[in-house]
Image (tube, rainbow, N blue to C red; front, side, top):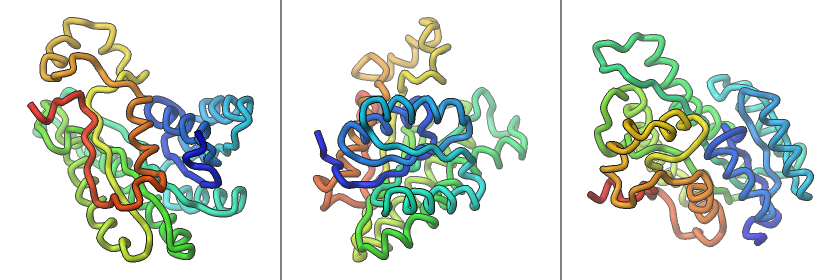
Length: 251
């Protein structure tokens, strides 16, 4: 407990799935957490739950595709809690079931805007506050789709591959300023978004056949890896890619 005592964290897409698990783990470990997402009711639920457990959290609704939202979320973190130590870029969307010749411009742009440009907006807004204190940890949530081919996900794969590269660029640029940046690449995780797949063995079993550990991961398992990278325990870790995929990319 208290691995993040005194820290202030901002988690995008913190209203459900992996993001919600990260928010809850961070709060239990002593961090004050700003939770962002597009659905106010879900944000309020998470913040109220944390408050009932004597944690500190603040909801800021909006989209990472809007640079004004990014700046507002960071400013509210600093105003409410006095600083910003940790940024977790978790918000993301996908497109499913289409090859590239079937993909329209609007879908391509939507996926890239959220998964890549959104990270740019949030990181650009957060870094000046971290520079002022000469410390900070940025953790980006990517995907195994950035390193292995997965059918019917061209825009998603492109966005996550670019996110991995952006992580390394940020890590190199700010290492001398006390700011670390790492990326976590989950495989199949049992989130609410994946619930229809989890309930369909005919679809799920062939996917799990490619995982040496033949089960989906849990949001909490991802959250505890992110916790390590966000904490001072990872003070000598930057520019690294962490696969959390049940062995999929090792096979």
